[in-house]
Length: 251
Image (tube, rainbow, N blue to C red; front, side):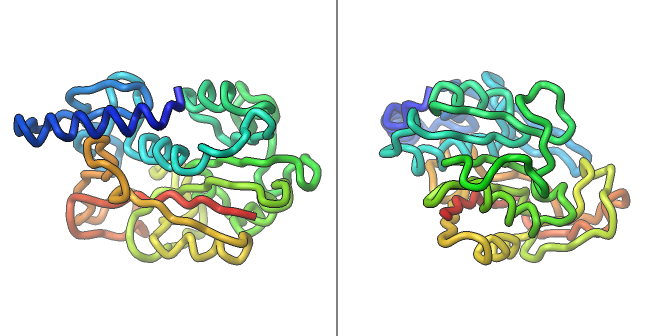
C-alpha cells in the first residue's frame, strides 16, 4: 500500500498497452491494483457509469484522493507525524494507520471510531495534529466556517488538511436545512466553495480529475441536466462528464 512510484510505473505501462491494442472500457484502480471493468453506481441523483472498483469498492473521489496523497505525502516523515481522520473511509483507515506514527479516527455519530467529536467544536488542544483528513464532511456542516477555524486550530504549524467536498456545479448553493435525499447535505457545493478555505489557510492547492491518468477513471460520468424533485435546490448542470476537485490546505 502507498507505493506511489509503483502505481505510476504500472499505470504508464497499461496506458501504453491501451494505445497499442485499442483497449476500451477497462480501468486500473490505484488503490487496490484491480484492472478491468468498473461498475456503475446508482445513487438517487442517477446512474454514474464506471464509478466503482469491484476490487476495493472505491469510487471516483477515493481514487482521485489517493493519487493526491501520492503528490502530498512522499518526502514527509509520516512515521513521526500525527493524523486525525474524520469520518474515516474503511480502506483509507488501513493505509493511514500503516503510514502515520499516531493515527486517530473521529466522527460525531459513528461508533467505530476512537473519538466522538463535533467538527465545529473539537476537544483536542491547539496544534495537536500534523495532518487532518475529512472527505465529504463539510457539506453536512451548517457552520462550515467554524469547522474550518477548528481544523486550523488543531493543526500544528505547517500542518496539512485535505478537505474535499462533492463538486456539483459552478456556484455553491446554501440550504436552509439538511436534505435527507442528499444524505443530509446542507449545501450544494460548487467550484467556488474552496475560495472559502483561503481565509483560513496560508496556501490551498487544488488537484482535479484531469491532472491524472484517465486510466484510473477519476471523472464522474452522470447526467445532471435534469432537476430532481427531491433535491429542488441542487442545480441542473449540462454535460455527462464532470470533474472532481481535491484541495490540499497548508497552515
